[in-house]
Image (tube, rainbow, N blue to C red; front, side, top):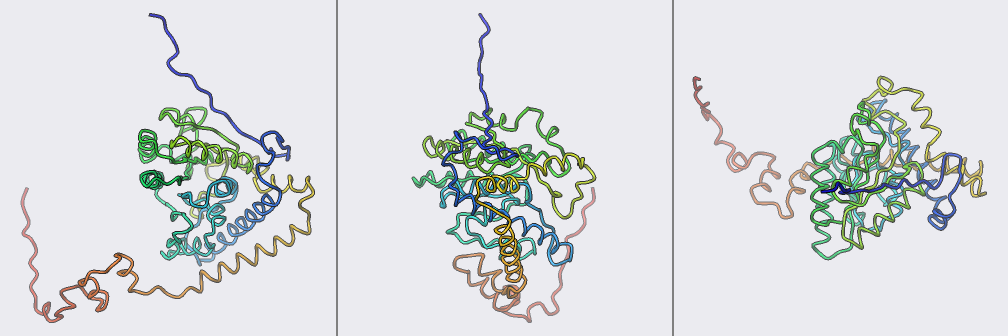
Length: 377
């Protein structure tokens, strides 16, 4: 029998605004109105300033470890802008720009990294999940959220963000396989920043693109310049339209780079070449938009100075709100566990003792506690 091709495919790469502010009018026309682009730029700059302040908070002992977002703002920012406000955003921990655009107060992210669980109490109407620190688990959550929406007959999607390193986790493959086989409308958004902490991308994936991993699951997929806000918006809108129409998952690989360390507990100088970092600084998504706005006469130095003042004011206010929050109520530990707290737990809460001690504190006086006998092997 003759040999014939079993399967062939191509994966498109989308770039609309390059590092020199050259703009593809055909792909980008009408994609982001000028007024919106100015707002997006301003928002990303405020988020960048928060990164700088958060770094200083950690170094001065006022906050725990913090993962800076700088260099990757255009990914979650473009997605949050392109999606409906009732689509779920399911982040890992470098999506501040998108979360803040959706309406999450900045102080909640600060509280999270200060170790205050109230930073994870995200208002339901924002359709944002809390930050996911374990690598890859959030992809399963996104699949479940989208599956629930499908079961209810809703046209709501879930968009989950993760890095290239997460695609080596079992949770990634389980979520991808589940979503593809059960026709679940999830957007899997891979922020390929080339480093899984200190492990380079070439060790994470030997294929030319991470997007190829989606092909194995029968998913539509696309790759874009993740530092190009126009390309991100283009790809997310395409993914969302197909996911709603077909009720199927879609995979996006956004090629980007984290300009800072993995977290404030990391020193990337030990494993990254500075020349590589410097090269990516020229591709900074914020600088790219600024060049574009300037060439279009939409931005100038006076506006930049005013924005710097506003960013400092907004971030300082967020820090003040985070640091001045009232101490948590000890009753919250019990009250937030159940919709209606059981009587035995209510007794523990009110007495701050175990159920039995709360009923009769004298019962433990003189009690003999026997340990189990040792067994020989």
